[in-house]
Image 1 (cartoon, rainbow, N blue to C red):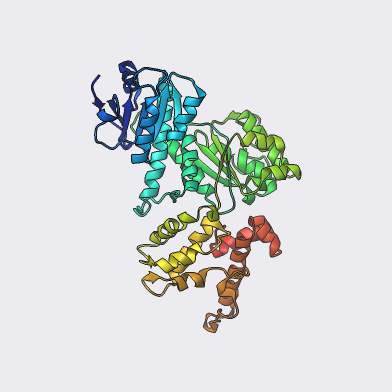
Image 2 (cartoon, helix red, strand yellow):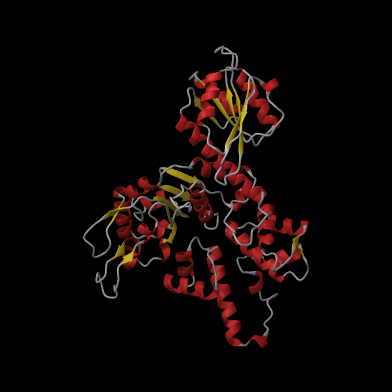
Length: 478
């Protein structure tokens, strides 16, 4: 058997990926080559010594390279490759179903273990998940190459906690929903929901005229939907269904047909509407308010929460049957305090986003100041602070003192609101001063509260008033 490489032809715009297969069985290599996706090329080898000097994106390693089941030479090869190329995605394969062998393969550095023979669908799905992971890594490693006309959310960070998130996202490639995203406010649930959607959209089929079919993505903040209008907004309504329904209206669920429906802050959904959502998840059917006929919707549901839904079930605030329906596939997002080594990467990324309007550079002492903060508002709070410091720093460099002037004080008050440092500019006029003070109160309430509802409660206003003020002041949730 000789080394052989087959290069892909048309890749549909997808990046070319290189697969290394180390196996002594010609039939196995041939079958993998035939089933290989068009944007992958395959290089085969018999042993470590025959592997060509080239970079690969993934490797499939047979555990028994000499055909003797009492010797697992592939384990040593996996360990060697992982030591020299830590980012290489390694798949161990064998016809031996020994649990000990499989677990050793993972311990040596393989990310998964496949049993031989490997079917076409299993091979392609495995490579698609690997490619999804590679794409996420590429996004992060090129985080400063910001394209102004096409700025998409990215997961930034190279910590172990971040690597676990990107691997979890990639593992959900071509997996049906529902998917549950858990994490504190500001940890990046919206970013992960978008990444889940995007990796499904990367290999779109083409329609007859050659145009790319668009996979819909609909994002719904359930906390912002009034309880009384949930059915109309979510399922739609027909003309004349109620006063003011002067035309047929498509619901959010229908709008997501063939794509992804992201339901944020599901903990804010009242019990009565939880039952309606559960019926939709179980049946996949929607009936517009006032309508007689139901239609079946094919969409993947992604839900997010910043609360412990199990505790809410115990408190009678969340339906247990709905929880079981949505938590089959769960991604847990770490708080920023649990991935502090990512703060520098994130901060440099956020400051870079401010270019070309504000060309600022972070200094080492600025990074130290950021690293010393607790970040109760997580990544969203870090982003806001970076935007503020890029705006107010008087020099082309951002110093530690510039960062500290924008960070909240330890007692919970913002530095700008501290009487010792806050100076009134009377030339602004009373209306402008009051407006700025009110905006500061809203921001501080959002920073210290778990969610918008709690923030509104703490300052004694209704949820709808809170959302209106946030909109008026251009404030996003922390």
